[in-house]
Image (cartoon, rainbow, N blue to C red):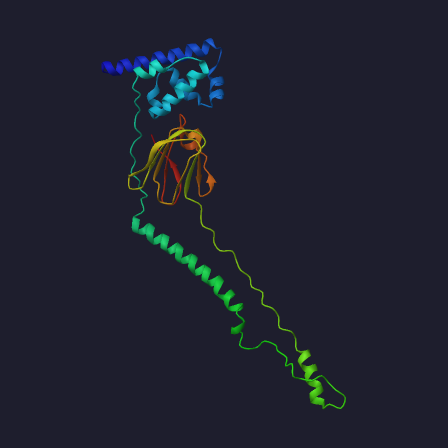
Length: 272
């Protein structure tokens, strides 16, 4: 261990000792602090033990330290200035379920073609049924020139109005229009209820998003666009998949969620 690393480790341990002593003097248990700050117990233990490198991105660690210090009414800024927070980067994973670009384009065009066929199958019969000029001239009409039956009139002339009136009236057409398919919801949507560091990686390994998102922001991604997701503050992120909220518990560790997204949209945890 170099002198620089030894100084950083000692500073982190000193800060953890200050946090633990301040908590004990305030008469607080770790469980009570966890409930007040909505912070996992493992994160609080790592902060007090100086194991900051296990908690994820530096911005996330600083936020947790400052929240803990505000609760205990102490100042941890001197420790943060002496310590250069370093984290172990998550392992780079290679997606084995990558879908080639031409296949995604073909599948998208095929889905659109199906929608067009379904729409035509519904709309064309309705249009034909509601066009009166295509009914072959079978509409029931009566001549206005036929005189009413008069005394002494011939039998044929008297019977004509009766014959015309005895014909059954034309029945109106009833068209049944089925609802058209609704556009599907985005394959993956992120809603921020608090600040969180986010990294989104595409199937080809390129980075779609890597930044600190603020509360109230949203991100939406289409199917096949996302291969891997890392959420620095998972408790402040609501993840929706095809309109349904995802439980992040299987993918969380110390409030950092990591998972992969297959081309079919299924989620899987990232093995450390």
